[in-house]
Image (cartoon, rainbow, N blue to C red; front, side):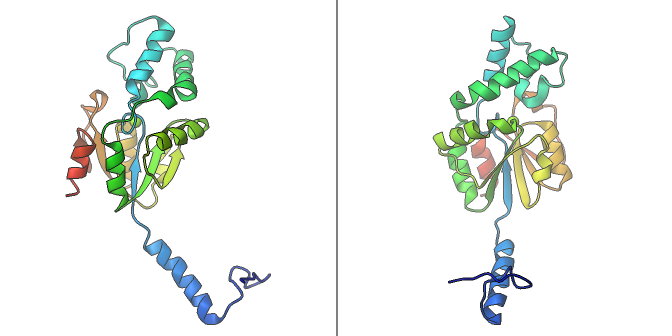
Length: 212
Ligand SMILES: [Mg+2]
């Protein structure tokens, strides 16, 4: 049985010096052998979200969707649409829409394939209170992952990340600034964006092809 001592040795099991060395070595090797991380966005990368945001807008306003705006990619945030309305749309999306969002074709196979080489680190700008429904949605669609982070500051989770895939130019810029190689999932709202270190892909199949 392992017994922890109080005092200078409290972090070690009460074992021989040799075993203490092995304990430390295993800790160090565990860190060294950790697979590199692959950051994966959810909305409009794993989940079809844009149409739902547009549907909510139309339902709340009674107006057709203004084509120059693309909501879940941040278009609404930077627009002159009333802030209260934007809040209501996002609130509705987070509270009610997530369970019914369709999965983007190829997502599961792609994550399963990438997970053989990488830690799948899902990083979404969804609000933290959407964690339970987000976990349930990932489970429902059998999407494998190693970590889930809900944060608007995606580059804060950059440690150990080698690649990232996102559809939002602002998040892509953050990843690039951290030295991460980024795949930009092609969407109408990001077509004017390009940058060194960023590879545009039309779908998951094309992203996987770059690893063959
Ligand atoms: Mg997105």
